[in-house]
Image (cartoon, rainbow, N blue to C red; front, side, top):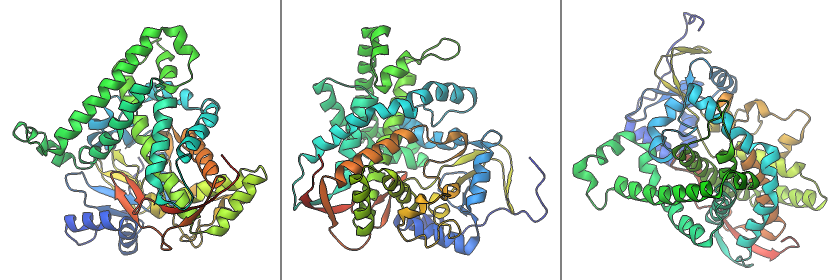
Length: 451
């Protein structure tokens, strides 16, 4: 690392009690981060209880610089492990570092390559249409739970490869309950450790006890599915195109395949990182479109003409204006200088994704929803980081984009949609995501020609 300039300083934090700041972050996530940026500058501290010092980076160039140090000082796995390992496990790609991470990434990335996942487009469309068969014009409901049902089905059938109706029903029941209980295990490690004390684990209302029980139920179902797949033999694995079978058939450069526990951890990782985030991104897409009817009309017209460019632009603008994940932290293995700031070893540092996406130089009038930003010859992708960046950029981004493209197109060509309430929905913190406060409520209009 180059020497720090004499003017370099550690980031500051607001002069408010830590619990008060956490309450503000939970209630007004983007507004709180904007307040910090206005008062403290482009790099600032947030007092997460029980965490090492945590700094947010709000400047697009500094965010890119931070991602550029992944191979030297940025440790994404170390930053995530205390929060995520209770759910995703020690062998999860999200929590690994060094050679272990590279080995898992090299095994997983080819299975999620665009050429592979595109073959699932038709199946995703069928799953979406099966859900919409239950919708009736005149209904008003929150779309996010409906999108969760669709993306869960994609995970169970196409990623996990479960075909048996009974096992599908068991997983449909167990997985959402596990994810609902995961927030305590994910967000507050100090509280989790207290609740894991033997004297407290026996209490019926202990949330960690409930989480542990549900995790055991899901694990048992996944390990049973892995055992069935192994019993079918390697030739049968190579004939199947679900992700679990592809991973089971893959080998590293030493000829070693993933163990059962590694497979379990990666399946849960894909479930956690792909199901919740994609369903939330879908909900935000419709929440934005019903409040910008000109954009919705332009999208339908482009789809009717056989185009896809405006669809891609709508999705990218939604992910800019309403990013699902608000940070992708790194733990620093040595001090790091970013611009005028000195970040000490051991600190956690993350781009504040909502603030990077609201940079007025890259995105003029950032509060406006303008898909046209991404239809120019030089779209502003330098400050667009909904999937993170650096060498730890989300490995499932191509699958997420395919789901978004397929599901959004299916819904808007089958039903008219309007906003149930005119006011935009507030962004609400749920676990590690930013969700629509009312679940993206819409009212269904007449049926259209799609579906």
